[in-house]
Amino acid sequence: MRTIEWKNDMKNGTITLIDQTLLPGEYKIIECKTVSALCEAIASLRIRGAPALGAAGGYGVALAAHTSTTTSFEQFMRDLHVAAETIKQTRPTAINLAWGVDRVIAAVRESSTSRIDEARRIALCEAVAIAEEDVQRNKRLSRHGAALFEDGDTVLTHCNAGRLACVDVGTAIGVIRAAVEAGKEISVISCETRPLNQGSRITTWELMQDKIPVTLIADSAAGSMMREGLIDKVIVGADRITRDAVFNKIGTYTHSVLAKEHDIPFYVAAPISTFDPARLEHDVVIEERDPDELRRINGVMLAPAGAVVYNPAFDATPIRNVTAVITEDGVMYPAQPDWWSRIPTS
Image (tube, rainbow, N blue to C red; front, top):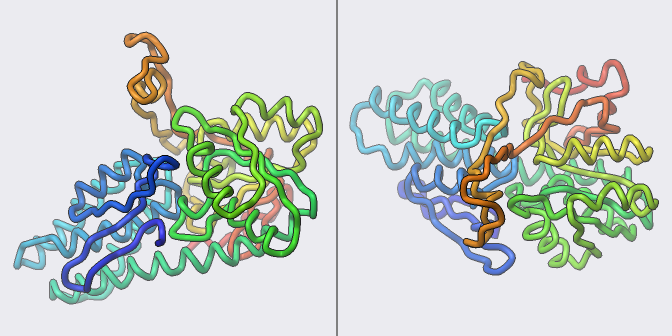
């Protein structure tokens, strides 16, 4: 099963996805038959990860097309645009979500069709293409990145950038998996990734499924391990990359500073769709999440109910802290003055 898929036929469809909030305790497939159900799944992190959100955005527009009941093409297009904006607002920091939405909207608009049935077909075909391309680009990305790792490396990763963050394969974890498949012995240090523990719940689970050696640590243990010489490289994914910064799960910046201090390569693995050439760090809105994600866990109070909480989902890592960015088109080195010119921008 892929992380997210379209089920049924071209006329009636359902988006199915793995509910990541239940892992590792339960592996459950859920169905989203309405745009509102998909938006809830995105906002609650049942589906998460930049590439997976790109597919979710595309499938969401296709779902809106298939559930619109109007017979007026003009109203049909208005329905699609309303759904598109609703989907994009569920998680504003990750660029792939908006990218997937906009790509399907553009495919319908540029087709010049005025028939609802044809527009539905085009929307679904484009959404399926986004998902299929994600699998293939992550395979290429993983092969490029695997060459950066040596036999015997111990690699630290933060949050989850594996299969479950994509339609399949993964980015950062895909690179590690490709290095292992190439015959290299790689062991992984997985940070728990508070407050929602995607590292402990998802990354550790994925790697154990693949029988890749993994050790779970508290986020705050990374610096000590680097100082003791227990980590050779760091690799993370990304939710958006501007010319001057990488946006990824909160805590990524801290790891980049620690890696730089200890002269450890810090790699970012992300598809080209994650790049945002139109913006700089200060232009990007950082999503802030429910304070109770920090105050509670499984209904147990970890802090007083009235405690003031700052709970950003992401942080920005200056591009100067990044050793290399691994993409499906190859490895890019930000220290090179012309590195951005190698990134396709259209």
